[in-house]
Image (cartoon, rainbow, N blue to C red; front, side):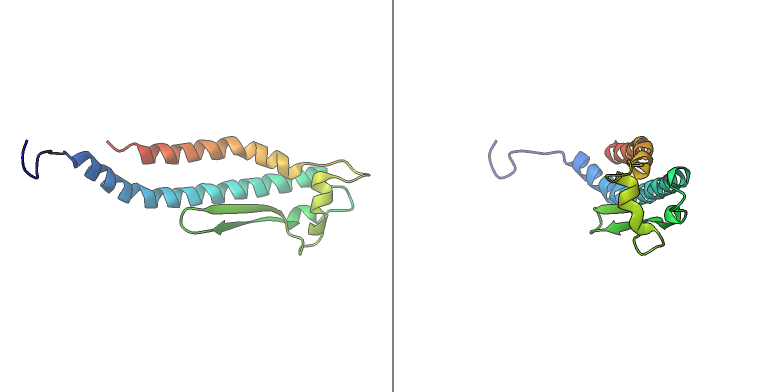
Length: 136
């Protein structure tokens, strides 16, 4: 082994992986956004449904105050904020109804909605990951 080319490397699998990632990363980003949007919408709907069933008679508008926002921090970071909008009628009651007070117990409407959605969300994210890692 003399000279500059003493070692030969087969880089075909690296090139194949590179092409695969160039295809799947943009798709994984789109799929992740869709899963986040669907999960946030499901939690919002379940939270409102739970609130309609458990809200006290003096807070009939509270379930309609529940909404969500999906925020993006660059191409790979998403954040869903879900809960009552304090600008909506009775939205400011959210903390009291969700977490309770000295005189009233917590309803945990949002917590129950989140717990219901987590298994489906995790399963969908695992599928996205699996598709991204399968490249041969």
